Structure formats: structure tokens, C-alpha cells
Length: 178
Image 1: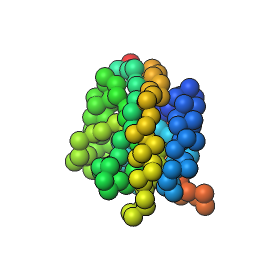
Image 2: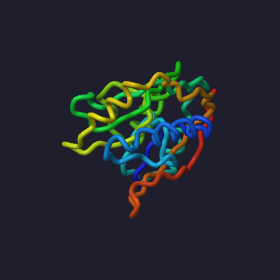
Image 3: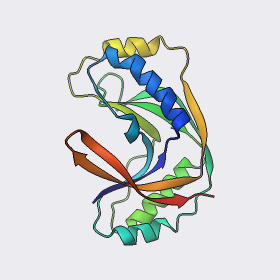
Image 4: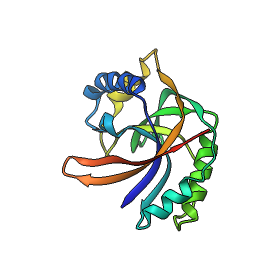
């Protein structure tokens, strides 16, 4: 199974982001992520055969519940050669949750993260050479970039399945925070 851990995005935030994507969609031919797939990844696990063992490790995570804000937009790796457009995410405790899920997964053989953790919510993927100038212009004219806040009281283990309509994410197990 192809797995990752993440914080689920509540409906209120999802609704605001859905409005944002509807406004941005005509500006560029990028691959917009379905709203049902929106989440805040804490650890990409990859292929894992021992799901029960991984669940056991994740049950030991003791990170605090936290307030999460979804504000602003950004580009990975940069706005000049973007591969993805994302909503910025902040929250005291996100880095700690990432560190603990990374350590828990490492105890089950998953490689530790080498790059710094940047919490985000992927809105679209950009293929090389896709013109995004109009999309940048529309974003530059936006005056409101607050997509909402919520209290994260848990994180999830998700499975990613490649289906005909693209990747679909399924919640496997919830783990409480706090």
C-alpha cells in the first residue's frame, strides 16, 4: 500500500478553497487537485507492507492538538519554474507533529526526511512548460488570502490509490492529538 500521514481539512476551509480554485481555474491549464484530496501532509511514507506495525508506531505519537491557519499561496519550487501551486499552512505544533510522524515511520523502515518540512496544501500540479503568467497575474490581484482556521485534534494515516480519474486518497486510521 502507498501511504502517508496528514491532517484532514475541515469543510469550512475546503469550501473557501473551492471558491478560490473556481476563480483561478480559467487562468491556467494546470492539473487542479480534487477538493476531496486536500490535506496537510505530515509524512510521506510510500509503499508499506506492514500497515498494522506502522499503525502501532503512529499510535505512540504524542503531539499536541493545534490551531492551523490556511493563508496565502505559494509555488514549489519557485514561482519562475513551478511544479505546484499550494495554499500556505501555519500552526504551532505542525513541525513537532511532522518530526514525530517521521520518527515513528523511520522505526518501521521508512527513510527519514532530508528536506526541511514546509506545511502546505497542494491545490494544483504544473507540468513543465505550462504557461502560468495569467495565473500569477490573477493571484497578484487578490486582496484576500485567508482561507480559514481550524483546530486540528487528530491526524490520519491515508492510502493513496492510482485510479482512472487520478490519485484518490482513502482514510485508514485516525490518531488523536493532545
